[in-house]
Image 1 (cartoon, rainbow, N blue to C red):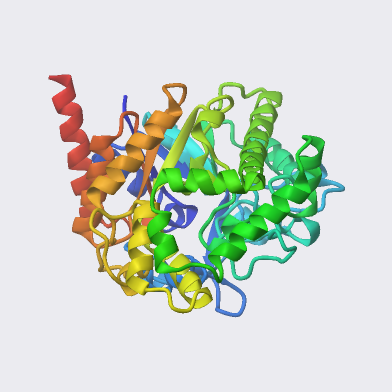
Image 2 (cartoon, one colour):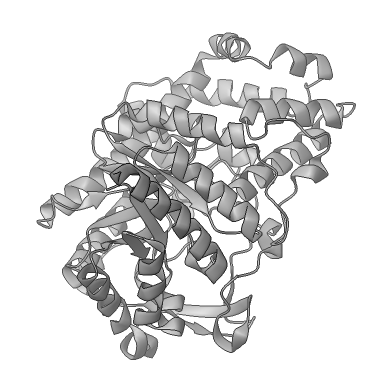
Amino acid sequence: MKRFGITVLPEYIQHEGIAGVLDRLEDAGVNAVATSPYVMAPADEATGSREPPRDAGAGEVRLLDRPLWGGRRELWVRTAPSFPVQRSRYEGLRYQPPPDDPLTTEAGPVIAEFLRAARDRGLRTYFQIQAAIPPAYRVQFGGPTGDDIPLLPDGRQPAERVANQGSLASPHIRGYQDALIGDLLSHYPELDGIRFDWPEYPPYKIDSAFLDFGSHAMADAERRGLDTARMRSDALRLYQRLHGELTDDWLAAHSSASSWTALLDELPGVSDWLAHKESLSLDLLAGFRRRMDACGRSDMELAPSAFPWPWSAVSGMQLGNAAAVCDTVAVKLYGMHWAMMLHFYGTQLLAANPGLSEQALVHWLVRLLDIDDQPRDTLEAYRYPGPDQPHPVGAEAQRRKIRIAESAGDGKLQVHILAHGYGPTDDVVTRAGLAWESSTAGIWINRYGYLNNEKLSRIGAIVQASRSANEE
């Protein structure tokens, strides 16, 4: 059956109760659910982190649709593992799980109970965890240290990243993930799969797209026989060209795929660097698969998430490669992030290239990223949308990304479309409906906290009407 999954983070299981959440999912026709291996409690600003996440400040406008403790749509929280960590698994590793916390004992069992109850109702069950951000339980929590921090071609660390990602080549991060997978599978036999978020280099900002030239990545490249000096110098040359050499005429001359092919021919080290990122992403995923198999779970679904084209060209996550080790991939259709990324890129490029026309740059970025059907004229038009603002993305642009993703999967793995529940009700329902109707294998929606009852009901009606029509 075509997949209709929703990510329900633990705080809602705690706050609304297992039966309440599952009743709503079942009424909407959901047949898969993902959660995460932590539990949550309210905190203060000094000791907690903001829920929902800040997204490097751009997402501070975000509010939850489903209120949490005290009826709040934004709050400060703390978390703890939902299971008693087997610390011997992590002995000698650079990264360690969080310290023991009474919250684990008090609230942790609800996650296993939720997974069992979901399976009893016929839903497939998943954990969603981070691929390269220890301790990996929760998005925007934790991060790498020391030489595990990925570097730019000039040796700098990127500033204020949205995703505090570690180097995909780090043996320390890979060792921690191996231990974590074993720990989770020993505690949660109810799981049908694990959804790894960001098994790539998330290109939310320009600097984040120019990773990874850290010591681990360069050592790996040298082992593969790559010319790391050329990779570094050519990537740096491209970075410099974008930061100080752009003109309106240059933008006009580089608005087609063929023009970028010619540019990469001039800088062969850039092609080597991009291909190396693909190798690192695939190696990371292959390691996850080996670890699952070693734990006796060759049946478990390896189900990473991925950026859509063209971001996948610089993130390292290529669906054709992933088919060798993954069962499914969920490709993100996050309109608020598409707008945010265009705004981040445009702001940085305008500042670095005096005399560049804002309108020409915005139109060029819209075409390059393919996020809208009719380009708007200003960066302000692509600012991170507020909770009551429709996402500034085009319907045909979304359909093109779905077609490209499914084509890249080449029938060798199931490609699910990952829609987002953030935004005004009509806009969310329209985007989710488009994803459902345009996809072959189905959709996930991230996340329950942004899905009020009306959104759930209306999206569920689209899904169930489609299923009924297919049965006739």
